[in-house]
Length: 320
Ligand code: PEP
Ligand code: MN
Image 1 (cartoon, rainbow, N blue to C red):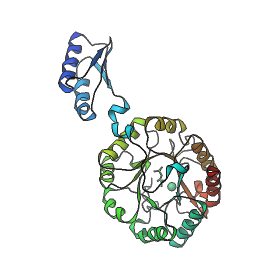
Image 2: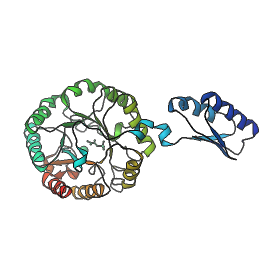
Image 3: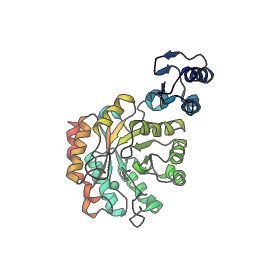
Image 4: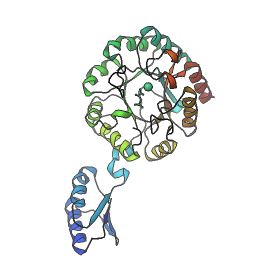
């Protein structure tokens, strides 16, 4: 951690900072420079009180923390999974954007199994920009996804949009998805963590690595034992596809599995296919893909939904 001094800093500022450091972090080593003091040994619990107190001192510009100090659990976490074997190449989670019709969903699930996917998207709740748009089938679709799991043997990944859904979701699905819109829903993150369910956490558009990792830290601190991070691009517009630099940095900074969702920032299924190939090329541990037999029948996001056939070709290539 580094405490940076502003232009107004004087001897009094430095003495006050030193005093605060000694009180907050007894025994910590301090390294003095002209414009900063570096402190080793800082725990995030103590830093949480220290940072605002230091920044309130006259002459202090800002306090800078390293990622490993702010998000120690996310940075030190490793890949762990009951469902996915990451040693055998990329893991594919796929299915329609939303579950609506049983017959179509079961046919999609069977075809996706055949194509080699490892888990099914099983989205019952859709966070939509418009309150008039289809909001998902809700728990009325529980039996549909349970049947799909029974028939295919594939685990289910379901987006959670409200902490009140979690208790029931623990009974019917295998992995909770926290979507881009809810990456910053901290009460939802706490509850998802407490559930001990595996979680896939998307990065929200334009969130920094630090914000993404802090949301991961919430999940891990509150009990999540198995976490996947998923990059999905910086916009719903099309000029910001999957952020490959963000993926590379995330891979360097944590041992957690890093997935990509190539679809939600893509203008078409063809663009989603390109994004999928690019994400795999930088070493994605898996993909979360919208794919179904008849994308033109999809109630939501048909435009960027791949056909099962296109996805099968990507999976085949990644296995060869
Ligand atoms: C989704 O994956 O269904 C979804 C809603 O995407 P995002 O959270 O990336 O907008
Ligand atoms: Mn979608």
